[in-house]
Length: 93
Image 1 (cartoon, rainbow, N blue to C red):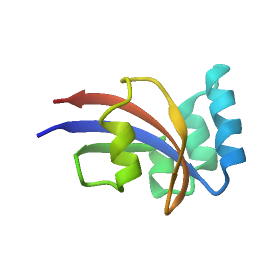
Image 2: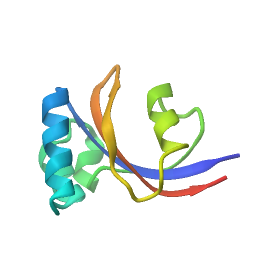
Image 3: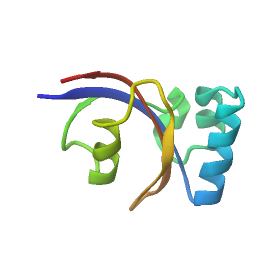
Image 4: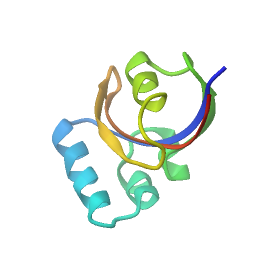
């Protein structure tokens, strides 16, 4: 079964999500921005979600995590919770 490790930043608006991605693309620390802006409890850990399998996260999240290149920030990704920036840090198929 496929497994992945990822980190994310969850915010309320697509605009804020896009702004944070621009900052990361410009060299800002993903972990620092997660701690400062993420509305998910994982923000305190720099957005780290740990390891999980396919189907353990919402479908929109799963689709990105199990298809996107590793170590490349993806988003904004809209889910029922808000807008996410996602980065797959490890994946095994």
